Amino acid sequence: MAVDIYGPEAATYTFTGPVFPIRTSLDISFDLVEGNPFERNPLERDGTIESVLNEQGKLNTRLKFGRFSPVTIDSEIDTVPWETWTYIQLNGGIEITFTDEMGNGRYDFAPLPDATGIADPEAIAYLARMTEHMPAVIYQQAVSTSPDFYRPGLPGDILNFYYDLAHFRGPDGQTNLEIYYGIPPEQVEIEQEADSSFIHVQLAVALANEGHTSIYRTTDEFAYRGAQVPSTIEQGSFVPEIIKTQVPPGKYELQVQMKDLISGRTGLYRQELQVRDYRIPELQVSEIQLASSIAEEGATKFLKEDVWIIPMPTRSYAATQNVYAYFEIYNLTKDTFGQTRYKTEYRIRSSAMPAVGVFGAVTAGLRTIFRTRKPQVAITNELTGRDADEREYVEIVLNKVRPGVNALEIIVTDLISGKSVEREVRFRYGN
Picture: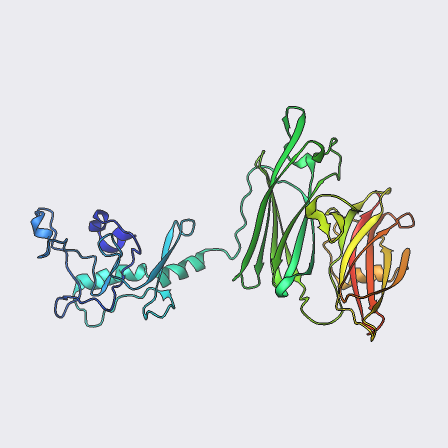
């Protein structure tokens, strides 16, 4: 870029900042050639060293255009405030320079030097080359040639894994988002260490808001040894894991990734996600977290208040299993005695539709199929308490449930205000 703008002479300079010329500080005095701000280069092929030095012994250069010049090792402190962003993977590598022209802390694309009144043909050609490398022009070219989404080519075989998610009310208006991973032993390389097995993976989550102006990323590495690694590799078996993050409510594009750090294989899933706003002061119910078990002890990462909720990212239960669910209730109304009274209803409805593809469907037609069927399981509880917010969990026996795809409906009714909220989650049961 430097040689393109300034010619071969640029190769003799050490650039310590923007290559594109930027304005020198306004409080510095200049001795300009009257009537022509363009400084010619007196260096000729047969010139001597003395012929290219000015009266102060500094190199005469065409790298200056009036009050504009690139940042070199000789001119680092003589410029307006600037920032340069370099992208090595866009258009073969680009540099975009921003300057604070007014000294008020507001940055914009570095402007083109003023060419008013210039008639020198060499100066005009010089300006034309600078125009091609203007930061605003470079930016627009990158926008027009770069796709809106980058879909990375993943090397080798794709790593398949399970994941599920749920979100709950967080602090300071944020929403707690939990991503539940299921790491299938048959998809990762299990390394043997003496008498122990070893799995090493990296899990990552990224959320981009609608305008892609904010990106939220969380990455962590996990290693499992000995009893943490399943002794048999069976279809549907997995090692459970969780990643937690906090985001403002809104609509996001979610990417969930897992990389096997031993084999190098990677898996990546993407979905649209609406994160609910729990700041609204009315009866609300969180998402439903399906669990494989609820215990009185376990790993700290699965602890919620005083119980351990082990996630079920596959949403698939064997014929011998029961379904476990966890959810939270917010903003219950208190009576004059400071007590809350509310009702929870649990219903499980089955569908005759095939299991494949059902979990991604969210159409009203699918919901109608479930709701027109009589519940195979129906449980109702009436409860009292003293807190406006409650944490609930339930175990439901599935021996009366049909194998296949089922929907668990949870309805919470505030018996003081009369308001109700319903949540639903689908799962597979049996073979």
